[in-house]
Amino acid sequence: MGFSEIFGQRQVISLVGRVIETGRLPHALLFTGPKGVGRSLTAVTVAKALNCLAGIKGDCCDRCPACHKIAKGIHPDVHLLAPEGATLKIDQIRTLTQEAALRPYEGRRKVFILDEAETMTEQAQNALLKTLEEPPGATLLILIAPEASALLPPIASRCSQIRFAPLPESTIAARLQEQGCDEEEAHLLASLAAGSLGRAQELRQSALQEIWDLIDQAIALSPGKTLPVLELTERVVRRKETLSLFLEALLAWCRDLMVSKVTRHEARLVYRRHGAALKRQSERLTLAQLLAMYHTVKQTLDGLGRYANPRLSLEIMFLKLRDLQTA
Image (cartoon, rainbow, N blue to C red):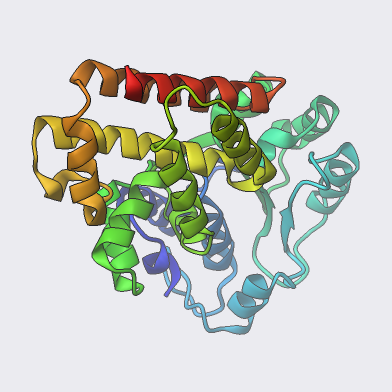
């Protein structure tokens, strides 16, 4: 119920609840941190707490008509703005500023939640600035962005920033197991989630078996043969939506090879179910080769999005991995 539903952000929730309870909530908040760690859910819960009819101090009941309307996105005083296409546009912000100037219709506070605020155009941010400089008394703005630096300095400086931390892998894995994942799958998903429970849950629904099939091909490329490299590159490029996931999963495999080589402790592996295969591969390669493989994949992953030609970068990566494994 209320803030208790927000997982893994105890310090943030304690701070927000205390500020609401004491009535010292600023006119604009900036929630920063990675996606999937509770920023949006917290923003909606703040809107509920400010307009809840049950009178719970610093929280909400999640049962009254106001809470239900906010949850369904139909409360007249709570507005969620999301990008239209790739950006939050100036017309959306102009509508916000007009609405913000009006008194609440049925609640105590008007709340505007700007999801992916970093996508605001420069014109849209400038249009928002006046509302931030001269905020109406019964209005709260909550901006959600990965970093304060993703916004223009005048916008960020007029908001009180609350940082949502990435969640520990062990915390994410435990939560996934509570939701029905087996232990190995939970640890694998947690390792690929970059501290985001939301991302881990999305990955759980994705084609992980297909990803594993691609990894299996990458670690078994035949020495001296180029055609398999080109065919594998084509398969990976065709699945643009899982390209970064594939590279992250391959990076985890390379990391496990080093762990298997150095420690022999399967409990420390991400791919625990494949401990025997990792052991066999790591035994025939030197630690220097394994480290070079890891850096090769990491460099490709880090460069993803900067390269004009992902296909070329993948081909180079696979050729390097092939040669490193047969050196």
